[in-house]
Image (cartoon, rainbow, N blue to C red; front, side, top):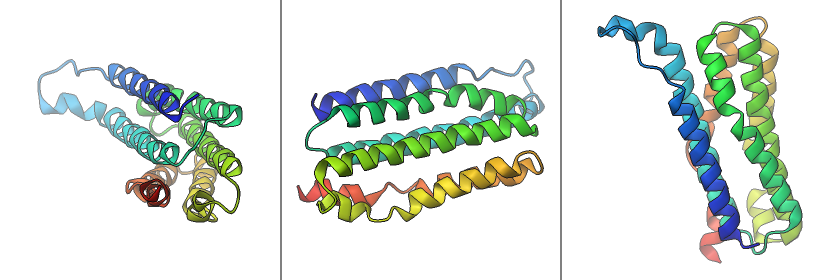
Length: 192
């Protein structure tokens, strides 16, 4: 399979995920600005989830541009990532409707954690394919930002039963860390 085909499939899945997520947003019943107030948590959760999907889409694009050939391991790692991303609309809706509840906050974090681990697995599968001495492996290095993200998600999940706003803050912090695309893989495919 070509990297273009894998990238196109992944782009399509992410586009569908975003579409499902936006279709879950409901318009307020009233016509005043006060009618929007109860929907603010739903909207903010949507914005955060949209940012996450955009971050994954962008970094996924740059990562796949560094791939020479798609192997079965890369395909399955990519599919696992898409599985966890496909659950984002469900957990976004649940958290948005129950923004101060421990379980929706924790399980939103679990979904983010599993997507991060899956992306890490995809990166490792690609690095293994290219070799640990490849330009890609060197550019990714120890993946400090990826490992830190996983640790922050775990902290957010552990805080959820006690103080949900700390969990929310940690989830936002990770998104802010990743808003700037991962330039490590961009450098590799720009030099190719």
